Image 1 (cartoon, rainbow, N blue to C red):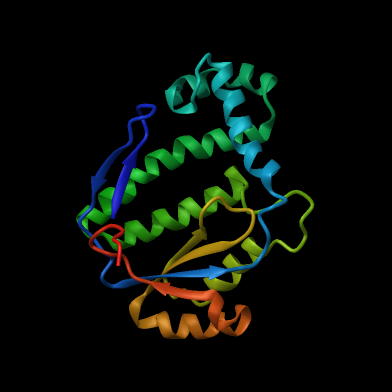
Image 2: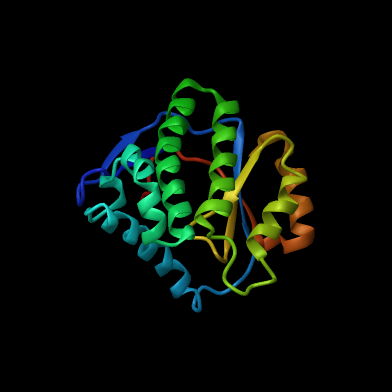
Amino acid sequence: LTLLNFDTKGDVKPTHIDNVLPDYTLVLIDTGGDHKHLTGEYASITEEMGRVSAFFGRERLIEVREEEFYARMPELKRAVNGRAIQRAIHFFEENKRVYALAAALNDGDYVAFLDAVNESGFSSQTLLQNTYPAGDTDQAIPTALAIARRYLRGGANRVHGGGFAGTILNVVQNEYVAEFTENMSKIYGGGKVVPLKVRSVGPIVL
């Protein structure tokens, strides 16, 4: 696994984490949906977080101190909409959560790791709000997350990628993978439920 640090613009710093989740399998589920009409949804995240950073005279939200963000909340609430504030809160909390996840993996503390994954997913759903496209009553992503949680047996799940449509990620204990995959395949089809293992090395050319 690799931790990426984007603190310095244009200079991504990778840190290797020596853990391949030996007792767990990552199961991706394609919930369906089409991304071609979602450009506005994705753009709104960058735009709204940009309004928050611009309020503080910064180009990027990562340049804004969390203490200042909350200290100037009365002014900020008058300057930007509530969703922008919620998305910024997700940003601050998620950045801290990444380091908590890394620490859990380095320590082999899988309870803390799974808790953090679930917290991340809940935050994405409720604060970042990237699982409910505007006007969409089908709500494929939240529906799949809710159904999958019945069969996780102590695992974790969250929206995968940019959200709004497409895939969810499930972290499933190895002994329950077959059962989990069977149950979810009945709903989404066998080709839509894909178990994967974490590799000890990065991408290679075969």
